[in-house]
Length: 357
Image (cartoon, rainbow, N blue to C red; front, side, top):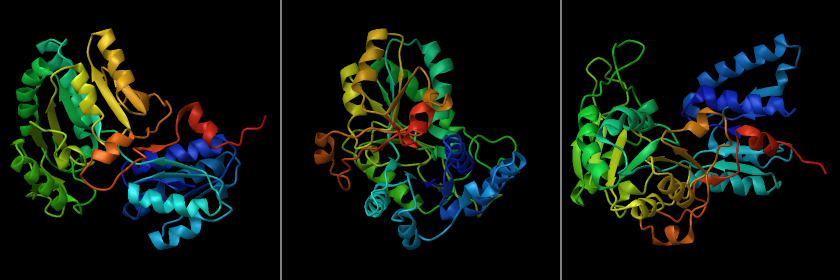
């Protein structure tokens, strides 16, 4: 059984379908209420493929229900494995329910992914190689990406070079609908439910010393007044003590954080209670190895963003240290970090199997 979240509804439906079929099992998909209709359509495509190949279409089922009904599913003894993608509070409910039948659960709980940019890179490389990757990592899918870059952590020379580059690029992003407008750079969010919270986090950060260089508020699109648009946002001088540096934003917001050294950059990377993905940009092999080893994350890309994801490597987070959860004043302790278990890759396929010695 899989609980895909609302972001990337096609991928988050198709990926578990493929993994389940390849391991000889059947799948029950419980999609987000926000993507119920699209998931039903995607499932119909997969079921048609099964029928064409002579297999039963009953191997894949999609069921949309409200959370109070989902408890019946997660505790049902007929469910052999659960993959949950979502928030910490809901994960606690799902895991407690699954424990009634001792059903194993793979949990992915989002991230606050850092991109560490070190001083060894030239101004040309920062502008023409690193900047495009950062922009993609931050603003792809309007920032609604669990492994999206939420914090750009740069050492002094890189910071001073990146700041005007990011400001110019973000201030000039074009907002619109990809089906009707051309050209555009960024589309709508799936919902405006979190916009007031985002705006309050941004106001709080500015009050604590951050500098708002772009965006910061929701956007009323003149052509699409019912669209859920948030202006592409850049905040600089971010410190880990700010709430905005601790909470997963899931929005088109770039936080630029200064680091005094490689060690400081690693410390800042590990200053949240999340530990999903990360990126490191440098030509210094020893510095890269220090970051890859020292940053607490389930996945790290080197001089790239999300390369581990695009190549089908095992996907998942890591637990956070007790010191992080004990000192985080923003919200409840999240000892689980970004979850546990893996999907994707050979390791993800094995997680859906009962190994026999």
